[in-house]
Image (cartoon, rainbow, N blue to C red; front, top):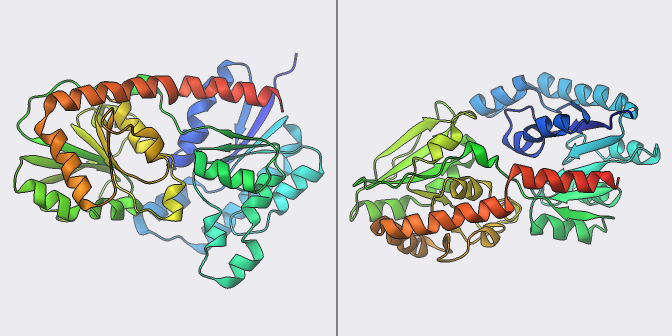
Length: 356
């Protein structure tokens, strides 16, 4: 019996977090089950490295990425299932998806961000009018929409997608060791992010300064090499991010945090940082935004905060009470084991694709 062949069109190479988590980490499981897989990302390593280091990119590199995607699309007829992350061609109409649909091949589309707001909320009125409903069209004409959270699912349902399934962003639980109980006098408040999301952490500057006057605390940031950590009023240090050691690094935190503004884009985020923290049996504090409200059970595995005062109160509770940190952390680990594991998601994926 011939192998089922799947062509994945992620947005980024493996260095890009969303593609690494939504596509690449599943590849060994697909292959183990006998599927034949091929991955053709839109952006390449050269683009992503330049973006992270300089915040911008050579237009010729970007143009090359469009031709790269077009070349990959020309071979799509050889595959049984076409899996698209977000869209085929960013900031172009949905011609590629239209071709796949009209050819009878069809496609599955996957979202872990509210990319539709790149178009319907774009500052340029021409982009809003020309492509404001692009992602809704892509969803509506797909065989299946996989949505990372309820915010994304609700958009897909409004777009009249044929089938919508929630597929949260998950962890390989085996790569996240549980926190070893620590009686260190200084409590480590940890945050994982990228250079572009550092702005979220800075919203807590006043909170850190106030807590630092009363407690011995340290801010630990896992981020890209060379990221500058601004002065937030307490001792802070950077640990360069590494895929291989990320779980071990997080397990050295005492408290995991995820601050977010209550904006449309952030409501589409999939609370992945919280899932990582909880996988290491850490208590969490998070902004009461989007999927954070689904993941955090108040007083059971962490706390939700709506303003700086609530952030300060929640963090102080955890700073002062080691036993509470341990209890909430263990509950968080249980939740991840039940709902947010790689193996669990893969079982759902197989069930969904057998029907396609």
